[in-house]
Image 1 (tube, rainbow, N blue to C red):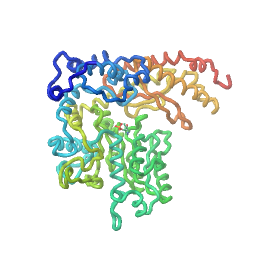
Image 2 (image 1 turned 135 degrees about the vertical axis):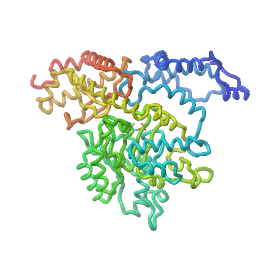
Image 3 (image 1 turned 90 degrees about the vertical axis):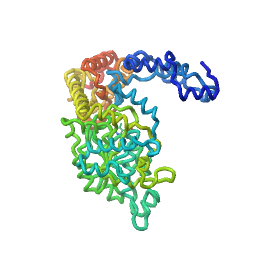
Image 4 (image 1 turned 45 degrees about the vertical axis):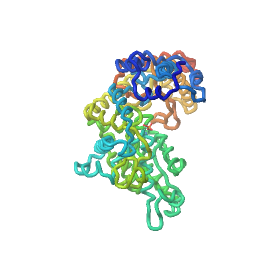
Length: 541
Ligand SMILES: *Cc1c(COP(=O)(O)O)cnc(C)c1O
């Protein structure tokens, strides 16, 4: 391995000088700049290397003693790391919310890293702070649509925050519920507030057994982390069953009342604006009514679906989001910003003050330091990427991207519906859908068979789906994910399904047809398929 000198002179060079033009690092850079798709297709080879084998390359726990030449290090990165990465840019990688990025993020990220601003305080970020506040304002406007004077008043106010920029939806959800918790258990005569005294004192003071947060079973697992981190406890996350994929307002009201009657207090209802598994949207307007009837906070987790607000055609699906006390939106999902860009938005710009924190050397009283109301401390200038995307695409650009994703999901659903051996499990509300492969004769049989046979058939199908999904992933041409769900067709048991997220604008109808054809081919080669077709599991056969 190319060992470099251990001298300060050499290390200064590493800080200040670019690599010479034909060094490996410079070549990588050039290749990436010329054509990222070409770079990825040449370097990210989907070899059948097991994770255990890859771990061998990352098994030394000692810090290397001597410096290495940047160039030889770059060579080893290509070999050990890049070659075994996942090509999230591939148009046939349609299993997750992580997809291709617009090219301009490459040079912009170089600018961001190069400037190395820290948004925690003005002294290390200057213009980045007003920029981040403006981004939060634009997103706030997209959700809440207040008048111009509102934004003039609050956008740059040192004593208010329209939101908190953070690394993603998880932190945004925690931030929103943190604000809700501190507000619900705020200071009163004889009590300094939960932020100062802690939960035990707060429960004693307010005379409550527990605080609870309600969502449907499709609520994102970050909510479970949130109630844990906030000291509320995972058992107090009331995740209601939802065979329809959405939280039913009547159920929410009933469960909320029952919970409060036991001496507990419901802290918040979380409506999901596009669930991670199926893309369904809870009835937000009605849930806002329930929250106000129960007297609790209303949070909307629109980490995935929030960008739908850019579309005039589809934004009505999120009706009621403007009544939420707080909203989570991830820019690194449907806004095509690199990972590490989430936002919690607050309807009332006063509310963030319940988590405001001051320190002497930093975050001084009256300063506009963003770190005073964010959970995270040091943060990079990622808001610039959102700012640039908002300008480069504009609302109408995002609208086109959102509309075409949803359109494509509908087309894919049609293909599935038309194919005799596929069964659509959840139709797309947004650009997500779930389905499974199932021989036509078995689909017919499932309609009439008795419970025991239905169960046996479904168990076989579950196994088949798992198998097909794995084999398809291993074949390396395309990737679809899988999950388990209850659905209107199968309300009493969950079934294993393929899950597709149509995030990449470059995915074509032809790609989708090829993915179905591949799944059919893989499925029909399995033993389970032959057994199903031979009627092995039919009790009457
Ligand atoms: C992705 C997602 C999250 C979590 O966001 P991260 O950015 O992964 O932390 C939360 N809620 C929903 C609905 C999501 O889709």
